[in-house]
Image (tube, rainbow, N blue to C red; front, side, top):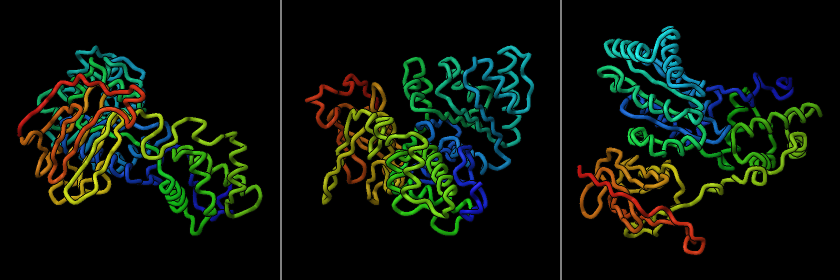
Length: 403
Protein backbone atom coordinates (compact mmCIF):
# COMPACT_ATOMS: atom_id res chain seq x y z
CA UNK A 1 0.00 0.00 0.00
CA UNK A 2 2.61 2.56 1.05
CA UNK A 3 5.72 1.06 -0.58
CA UNK A 4 6.02 3.61 -3.39
CA UNK A 5 5.48 6.57 -1.05
CA UNK A 6 8.40 5.52 1.15
CA UNK A 7 10.59 4.16 -1.64
CA UNK A 8 10.46 0.57 -0.39
CA UNK A 9 10.62 -2.71 -2.27
CA UNK A 10 8.68 -4.74 0.31
CA UNK A 11 6.88 -4.35 3.62
CA UNK A 12 9.41 -3.89 6.44
CA UNK A 13 7.21 -4.72 9.43
CA UNK A 14 5.32 -7.89 8.61
CA UNK A 15 4.41 -9.96 11.66
CA UNK A 16 5.20 -13.29 9.99
CA UNK A 17 8.74 -14.55 10.69
CA UNK A 18 11.22 -13.90 7.88
CA UNK A 19 14.88 -14.82 8.45
CA UNK A 20 16.01 -12.15 5.98
CA UNK A 21 14.82 -9.49 8.41
CA UNK A 22 16.46 -10.98 11.51
CA UNK A 23 18.13 -8.26 13.56
CA UNK A 24 21.06 -9.67 15.49
CA UNK A 25 21.17 -7.78 18.75
CA UNK A 26 23.94 -8.87 21.10
CA UNK A 27 21.66 -11.35 22.81
CA UNK A 28 20.17 -12.67 19.55
CA UNK A 29 23.71 -13.23 18.23
CA UNK A 30 24.58 -15.19 21.36
CA UNK A 31 21.42 -17.26 21.11
CA UNK A 32 22.23 -18.10 17.48
CA UNK A 33 25.74 -19.16 18.49
CA UNK A 34 24.24 -21.50 21.08
CA UNK A 35 21.89 -22.97 18.48
CA UNK A 36 24.78 -23.52 16.08
CA UNK A 37 26.75 -25.28 18.82
CA UNK A 38 24.04 -27.93 19.13
CA UNK A 39 24.87 -29.29 15.69
CA UNK A 40 28.45 -30.00 16.77
CA UNK A 41 28.00 -31.07 20.40
CA UNK A 42 25.03 -33.41 19.83
CA UNK A 43 25.05 -34.59 23.44
CA UNK A 44 22.41 -32.51 25.16
CA UNK A 45 19.54 -30.11 24.82
CA UNK A 46 19.44 -26.39 24.18
CA UNK A 47 16.53 -24.40 25.61
CA UNK A 48 15.68 -20.95 24.22
CA UNK A 49 12.94 -18.99 25.96
CA UNK A 50 11.52 -15.51 25.48
CA UNK A 51 8.38 -13.48 25.92
CA UNK A 52 5.73 -13.52 23.19
CA UNK A 53 7.06 -11.53 20.24
CA UNK A 54 10.71 -11.58 21.35
CA UNK A 55 11.89 -13.04 18.05
CA UNK A 56 12.33 -16.73 18.91
CA UNK A 57 10.66 -18.05 15.77
CA UNK A 58 12.50 -15.68 13.43
CA UNK A 59 15.78 -16.69 15.06
CA UNK A 60 14.94 -20.38 14.56
CA UNK A 61 13.97 -19.80 10.94
CA UNK A 62 17.28 -18.07 10.25
CA UNK A 63 19.27 -20.79 12.02
CA UNK A 64 17.53 -23.60 10.14
CA UNK A 65 17.85 -21.83 6.78
CA UNK A 66 21.65 -21.89 7.09
CA UNK A 67 22.04 -25.61 7.89
CA UNK A 68 23.63 -27.61 5.08
CA UNK A 69 22.16 -30.68 3.42
CA UNK A 70 24.12 -32.94 5.74
CA UNK A 71 21.72 -32.03 8.57
CA UNK A 72 18.24 -33.58 8.67
CA UNK A 73 15.70 -31.36 10.41
CA UNK A 74 12.44 -32.24 12.16
CA UNK A 75 10.46 -29.12 13.11
CA UNK A 76 7.53 -29.63 15.49
CA UNK A 77 4.99 -26.82 15.89
CA UNK A 78 1.98 -28.63 17.37
CA UNK A 79 2.80 -29.24 21.02
CA UNK A 80 -0.57 -29.94 22.63
CA UNK A 81 -0.15 -33.64 21.88
CA UNK A 82 0.35 -36.99 23.60
CA UNK A 83 3.68 -38.81 23.62
CA UNK A 84 2.53 -41.12 20.80
CA UNK A 85 1.33 -38.16 18.72
CA UNK A 86 4.65 -36.42 19.24
CA UNK A 87 6.61 -39.46 17.99
CA UNK A 88 4.29 -39.65 15.00
CA UNK A 89 4.99 -35.98 14.25
CA UNK A 90 8.75 -36.53 14.35
CA UNK A 91 8.57 -39.49 11.99
CA UNK A 92 6.25 -37.59 9.65
CA UNK A 93 8.87 -34.84 9.43
CA UNK A 94 11.32 -37.48 8.21
CA UNK A 95 8.89 -38.58 5.47
CA UNK A 96 7.68 -41.72 7.25
CA UNK A 97 3.94 -42.45 7.50
CA UNK A 98 3.54 -43.51 11.13
CA UNK A 99 -0.14 -43.06 11.86
CA UNK A 100 -1.14 -46.73 12.16
CA UNK A 101 1.83 -47.64 14.36
CA UNK A 102 1.80 -48.40 18.05
CA UNK A 103 4.37 -46.80 20.34
CA UNK A 104 6.81 -49.73 20.17
CA UNK A 105 6.62 -49.64 16.37
CA UNK A 106 7.15 -45.87 16.36
CA UNK A 107 10.29 -46.19 18.48
CA UNK A 108 11.61 -49.00 16.28
CA UNK A 109 10.99 -46.98 13.11
CA UNK A 110 12.72 -43.96 14.62
CA UNK A 111 15.68 -46.07 15.77
CA UNK A 112 16.05 -47.57 12.30
CA UNK A 113 15.91 -44.15 10.65
CA UNK A 114 18.49 -42.64 13.01
CA UNK A 115 20.85 -45.59 12.51
CA UNK A 116 20.54 -45.03 8.77
CA UNK A 117 21.44 -41.37 9.13
CA UNK A 118 24.40 -42.28 11.31
CA UNK A 119 25.64 -44.72 8.69
CA UNK A 120 25.45 -41.92 6.11
CA UNK A 121 27.49 -39.59 8.33
CA UNK A 122 24.56 -37.20 8.77
CA UNK A 123 23.29 -35.31 11.80
CA UNK A 124 19.77 -34.64 13.05
CA UNK A 125 18.31 -31.49 14.57
CA UNK A 126 14.89 -31.77 16.21
CA UNK A 127 13.35 -28.38 16.94
CA UNK A 128 10.27 -28.12 19.15
CA UNK A 129 8.63 -24.69 19.01
CA UNK A 130 6.06 -23.55 21.61
CA UNK A 131 7.53 -26.17 23.93
CA UNK A 132 5.92 -24.57 26.99
CA UNK A 133 2.72 -26.42 26.02
CA UNK A 134 4.30 -29.87 26.26
CA UNK A 135 3.14 -32.24 28.95
CA UNK A 136 5.85 -33.63 31.26
CA UNK A 137 5.32 -37.12 29.82
CA UNK A 138 6.08 -35.77 26.34
CA UNK A 139 9.17 -33.94 27.58
CA UNK A 140 10.40 -37.17 29.13
CA UNK A 141 9.85 -38.90 25.78
CA UNK A 142 11.91 -36.18 24.13
CA UNK A 143 14.73 -36.78 26.60
CA UNK A 144 14.83 -40.41 25.53
CA UNK A 145 15.03 -39.60 21.82
CA UNK A 146 18.81 -39.27 21.88
CA UNK A 147 18.98 -42.78 23.34
CA UNK A 148 16.92 -44.37 20.58
CA UNK A 149 19.21 -46.78 18.80
CA UNK A 150 23.00 -47.32 19.04
CA UNK A 151 24.97 -44.16 18.39
CA UNK A 152 21.92 -41.89 18.25
CA UNK A 153 23.40 -39.58 20.86
CA UNK A 154 26.19 -38.73 18.42
CA UNK A 155 23.86 -37.42 15.74
CA UNK A 156 20.76 -36.04 17.47
CA UNK A 157 20.55 -32.43 18.67
CA UNK A 158 17.35 -31.21 20.31
CA UNK A 159 16.25 -27.59 20.65
CA UNK A 160 13.31 -26.61 22.83
CA UNK A 161 11.94 -23.11 22.27
CA UNK A 162 9.10 -21.53 24.18
CA UNK A 163 7.80 -18.93 26.56
CA UNK A 164 9.39 -18.36 30.00
CA UNK A 165 7.13 -20.86 31.77
CA UNK A 166 9.05 -23.62 29.94
CA UNK A 167 11.91 -23.06 32.39
CA UNK A 168 9.55 -23.54 35.32
CA UNK A 169 8.40 -26.84 33.86
CA UNK A 170 11.95 -28.03 33.26
CA UNK A 171 12.84 -27.28 36.89
CA UNK A 172 10.14 -29.64 38.18
CA UNK A 173 11.44 -32.69 40.10
CA UNK A 174 10.00 -35.22 37.63
CA UNK A 175 12.15 -33.74 34.84
CA UNK A 176 15.44 -33.73 36.74
CA UNK A 177 17.11 -36.05 34.21
CA UNK A 178 16.14 -33.74 31.34
CA UNK A 179 17.39 -30.70 33.26
CA UNK A 180 20.73 -32.41 33.85
CA UNK A 181 21.12 -33.14 30.16
CA UNK A 182 20.32 -29.58 29.13
CA UNK A 183 23.59 -28.17 27.88
CA UNK A 184 22.47 -24.57 27.48
CA UNK A 185 19.57 -22.34 28.48
CA UNK A 186 19.14 -18.88 27.04
CA UNK A 187 16.41 -16.32 27.62
CA UNK A 188 15.73 -13.70 24.93
CA UNK A 189 14.94 -10.41 26.61
CA UNK A 190 13.40 -7.37 24.97
CA UNK A 191 15.61 -4.95 23.02
CA UNK A 192 17.18 -1.95 24.71
CA UNK A 193 16.25 1.55 23.56
CA UNK A 194 19.33 1.81 21.36
CA UNK A 195 18.69 -1.66 19.93
CA UNK A 196 15.07 -0.77 19.22
CA UNK A 197 16.16 2.15 17.04
CA UNK A 198 18.75 -0.05 15.29
CA UNK A 199 16.08 -2.74 14.78
CA UNK A 200 13.71 -0.29 13.05
CA UNK A 201 16.47 1.07 10.82
CA UNK A 202 17.66 -2.46 9.98
CA UNK A 203 14.24 -3.65 8.82
CA UNK A 204 13.72 -0.53 6.74
CA UNK A 205 17.12 -1.00 5.10
CA UNK A 206 16.38 -4.65 4.27
CA UNK A 207 13.08 -3.51 2.74
CA UNK A 208 14.93 -1.10 0.45
CA UNK A 209 14.92 2.23 2.28
CA UNK A 210 17.66 4.60 1.16
CA UNK A 211 17.06 7.44 3.61
CA UNK A 212 15.56 8.17 7.01
CA UNK A 213 11.85 7.35 7.12
CA UNK A 214 11.33 7.75 10.88
CA UNK A 215 12.25 11.11 12.38
CA UNK A 216 14.87 10.87 15.17
CA UNK A 217 12.41 12.00 17.85
CA UNK A 218 10.14 9.03 17.13
CA UNK A 219 12.47 6.32 18.47
CA UNK A 220 12.15 7.09 22.21
CA UNK A 221 8.37 7.02 21.73
CA UNK A 222 8.54 3.66 19.93
CA UNK A 223 10.52 2.23 22.80
CA UNK A 224 8.26 3.68 25.47
CA UNK A 225 5.14 2.11 23.97
CA UNK A 226 6.64 -1.25 22.86
CA UNK A 227 9.17 -1.98 25.60
CA UNK A 228 11.55 -3.17 22.88
CA UNK A 229 9.44 -6.25 22.05
CA UNK A 230 10.06 -6.82 18.30
CA UNK A 231 6.50 -7.88 17.42
CA UNK A 232 5.06 -4.80 19.13
CA UNK A 233 7.63 -2.60 17.38
CA UNK A 234 6.48 -4.04 14.04
CA UNK A 235 2.83 -3.36 14.82
CA UNK A 236 3.40 0.22 15.95
CA UNK A 237 5.79 1.17 13.15
CA UNK A 238 3.56 -0.30 10.45
CA UNK A 239 0.54 1.57 11.82
CA UNK A 240 2.52 4.83 12.01
CA UNK A 241 3.63 4.44 8.39
CA UNK A 242 -0.01 3.97 7.36
CA UNK A 243 -0.90 7.19 9.21
CA UNK A 244 1.88 9.12 7.44
CA UNK A 245 0.86 7.57 4.09
CA UNK A 246 -2.74 8.67 4.57
CA UNK A 247 -1.46 12.22 5.05
CA UNK A 248 0.71 11.86 1.92
CA UNK A 249 3.96 12.27 3.84
CA UNK A 250 7.15 10.36 3.04
CA UNK A 251 8.46 10.44 6.59
CA UNK A 252 6.98 9.40 9.93
CA UNK A 253 6.83 12.15 12.55
CA UNK A 254 6.22 12.03 16.29
CA UNK A 255 2.64 13.20 15.64
CA UNK A 256 2.09 10.29 13.25
CA UNK A 257 3.37 7.92 15.90
CA UNK A 258 1.07 9.39 18.57
CA UNK A 259 -1.91 9.06 16.22
CA UNK A 260 -0.97 5.42 15.61
CA UNK A 261 -0.81 4.83 19.36
CA UNK A 262 -4.30 6.29 19.71
CA UNK A 263 -5.60 4.04 16.95
CA UNK A 264 -4.10 1.01 18.66
CA UNK A 265 -5.49 2.24 21.99
CA UNK A 266 -2.16 1.57 23.68
CA UNK A 267 -0.89 3.02 26.91
CA UNK A 268 2.84 3.00 27.60
CA UNK A 269 4.37 -0.45 27.86
CA UNK A 270 5.21 -0.21 31.55
CA UNK A 271 1.61 0.40 32.58
CA UNK A 272 0.28 -2.30 30.21
CA UNK A 273 2.55 -5.12 31.32
CA UNK A 274 4.65 -4.09 34.31
CA UNK A 275 7.54 -5.67 32.43
CA UNK A 276 9.44 -2.62 31.27
CA UNK A 277 13.08 -3.62 31.25
CA UNK A 278 16.05 -1.58 32.36
CA UNK A 279 18.72 -4.23 32.80
CA UNK A 280 16.84 -6.86 34.85
CA UNK A 281 13.10 -7.04 34.17
CA UNK A 282 10.95 -5.58 36.92
CA UNK A 283 8.77 -8.69 36.94
CA UNK A 284 11.78 -10.92 37.55
CA UNK A 285 12.56 -11.33 41.24
CA UNK A 286 16.21 -10.72 42.06
CA UNK A 287 17.03 -13.72 44.20
CA UNK A 288 20.81 -13.39 44.55
CA UNK A 289 23.85 -11.39 43.51
CA UNK A 290 27.40 -12.06 42.40
CA UNK A 291 30.17 -9.82 43.75
CA UNK A 292 33.18 -9.80 41.40
CA UNK A 293 36.56 -8.52 42.54
CA UNK A 294 40.02 -8.42 40.99
CA UNK A 295 43.25 -6.75 42.19
CA UNK A 296 43.52 -3.24 40.78
CA UNK A 297 39.87 -3.05 39.70
CA UNK A 298 36.72 -1.67 41.25
CA UNK A 299 34.47 -4.47 42.56
CA UNK A 300 31.37 -5.15 40.45
CA UNK A 301 27.98 -6.39 41.64
CA UNK A 302 25.63 -8.36 39.39
CA UNK A 303 21.96 -8.96 40.36
CA UNK A 304 20.74 -12.46 39.57
CA UNK A 305 17.20 -13.48 38.70
CA UNK A 306 16.26 -17.05 37.85
CA UNK A 307 17.78 -18.05 34.55
CA UNK A 308 21.15 -18.58 32.94
CA UNK A 309 24.14 -16.24 32.98
CA UNK A 310 27.27 -16.70 30.87
CA UNK A 311 30.65 -15.70 32.31
CA UNK A 312 33.55 -14.91 29.99
CA UNK A 313 36.16 -12.53 28.65
CA UNK A 314 34.22 -10.76 25.89
CA UNK A 315 31.53 -8.09 26.13
CA UNK A 316 28.61 -10.25 24.99
CA UNK A 317 28.75 -12.25 28.24
CA UNK A 318 26.33 -11.54 31.08
CA UNK A 319 29.27 -11.28 33.48
CA UNK A 320 32.41 -10.02 31.77
CA UNK A 321 35.83 -10.82 33.24
CA UNK A 322 38.26 -8.92 31.02
CA UNK A 323 41.42 -10.94 31.54
CA UNK A 324 43.81 -13.04 29.47
CA UNK A 325 43.31 -15.84 31.99
CA UNK A 326 39.59 -16.05 31.12
CA UNK A 327 38.21 -17.86 28.08
CA UNK A 328 35.80 -16.15 25.71
CA UNK A 329 32.91 -18.19 27.17
CA UNK A 330 34.42 -19.52 30.37
CA UNK A 331 31.52 -20.72 32.53
CA UNK A 332 27.81 -20.46 32.98
CA UNK A 333 25.75 -19.84 36.08
CA UNK A 334 22.30 -21.42 36.30
CA UNK A 335 19.96 -19.86 38.85
CA UNK A 336 17.13 -22.33 39.35
CA UNK A 337 14.20 -22.67 41.69
CA UNK A 338 16.10 -24.65 44.32
CA UNK A 339 19.75 -24.46 43.36
CA UNK A 340 22.41 -22.20 41.87
CA UNK A 341 25.12 -23.97 39.89
CA UNK A 342 28.29 -22.69 38.23
CA UNK A 343 29.74 -24.95 35.55
CA UNK A 344 32.92 -24.82 33.49
CA UNK A 345 32.43 -24.52 29.71
CA UNK A 346 35.60 -26.47 28.88
CA UNK A 347 37.72 -23.38 29.55
CA UNK A 348 41.51 -23.37 29.37
CA UNK A 349 42.19 -22.29 32.97
CA UNK A 350 39.10 -23.64 34.71
CA UNK A 351 37.18 -22.74 37.87
CA UNK A 352 38.58 -23.10 41.40
CA UNK A 353 36.80 -23.57 44.70
CA UNK A 354 38.70 -24.01 47.96
CA UNK A 355 41.96 -24.19 46.03
CA UNK A 356 40.82 -27.12 43.88
CA UNK A 357 39.78 -27.06 40.25
CA UNK A 358 36.13 -28.07 39.81
CA UNK A 359 33.96 -28.69 36.78
CA UNK A 360 30.65 -28.02 38.49
CA UNK A 361 29.79 -26.48 41.83
CA UNK A 362 26.44 -25.89 43.53
CA UNK A 363 26.77 -22.62 45.40
CA UNK A 364 25.69 -21.69 48.91
CA UNK A 365 25.47 -18.23 50.37
CA UNK A 366 29.01 -16.92 50.93
CA UNK A 367 30.75 -19.35 48.55
CA UNK A 368 33.55 -17.85 46.49
CA UNK A 369 34.92 -19.29 43.26
CA UNK A 370 38.06 -18.13 41.47
CA UNK A 371 38.39 -17.67 37.71
CA UNK A 372 41.85 -16.49 36.73
CA UNK A 373 42.57 -13.40 38.83
CA UNK A 374 38.91 -12.78 39.61
CA UNK A 375 37.03 -13.87 42.71
CA UNK A 376 33.28 -14.33 42.42
CA UNK A 377 31.43 -14.19 45.74
CA UNK A 378 27.88 -15.55 45.70
CA UNK A 379 25.34 -13.95 48.05
CA UNK A 380 21.71 -14.96 48.40
CA UNK A 381 18.81 -12.52 48.51
CA UNK A 382 18.03 -9.14 46.97
CA UNK A 383 19.84 -5.95 47.96
CA UNK A 384 17.30 -5.31 50.70
CA UNK A 385 16.35 -8.93 51.34
CA UNK A 386 16.64 -8.49 55.11
CA UNK A 387 13.93 -5.85 54.98
CA UNK A 388 11.56 -7.66 52.64
CA UNK A 389 12.07 -11.16 53.92
CA UNK A 390 12.81 -12.43 50.40
CA UNK A 391 15.51 -15.06 50.51
CA UNK A 392 16.63 -17.71 48.09
CA UNK A 393 16.27 -21.33 49.14
CA UNK A 394 19.29 -22.00 51.35
CA UNK A 395 18.92 -25.77 51.46
CA UNK A 396 21.23 -26.59 48.58
CA UNK A 397 23.00 -29.87 48.04
CA UNK A 398 26.66 -29.44 47.21
CA UNK A 399 27.99 -30.95 44.03
CA UNK A 400 31.72 -30.81 43.41
CA UNK A 401 33.78 -32.66 40.85
CA UNK A 402 37.52 -32.45 40.25
CA UNK A 403 38.81 -32.39 36.71
